[in-house]
Length: 220
Image (cartoon, rainbow, N blue to C red; front, side):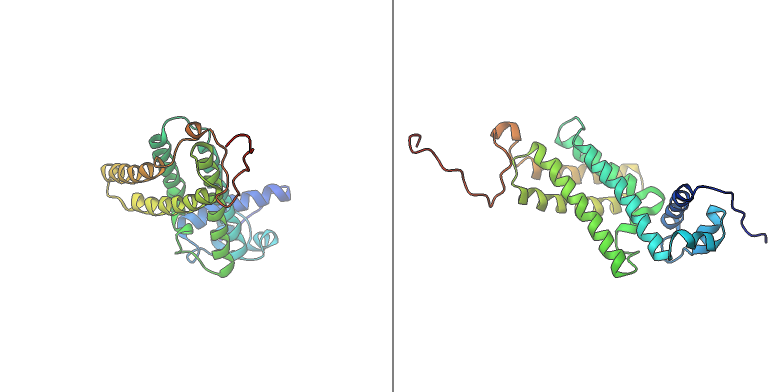
């Protein structure tokens, strides 16, 4: 069997190529079933070339998580600019999260099955926390919530999105997926609509712990 041949490529371009192909292999096979040989073969390079860019399989895997995590963060940020009512936004958000997580089985990279070390676990937790904070910002843009409430809801909604993505992944057909989306969307929207719209309050998002502003004595 002939060894892989490598064409000359600028270092950063080569690194980006290796990272992209590693993402494909990891998301297709999972961490445990993937070897550095598999990734080198997919990239058409020798294993020493791969190690020139990434010191270990785990280090490469952590960067793969960052790539997928950044794609999810972009989706959460984009939610703020989407039109439609609360139900439309929630349904679309859940579906997009599912599509991202299900792309070549990348769902399992974020559901605990591929947590292989403390560093990987910490990275997954950090990515999900960042998503929660971004989602909290989206919620604050159109619901009258304190910062604390928004963060609590953000974390909860990310958890719901993960569970829903797994259910959608396991669903037998499109009809079952539609039922899952409709049910979860109804629950989430019902909860969110219990908070007033920002336009209805005419107030900024004050943190629940912030002291109330002092009133002028001449205006009781």
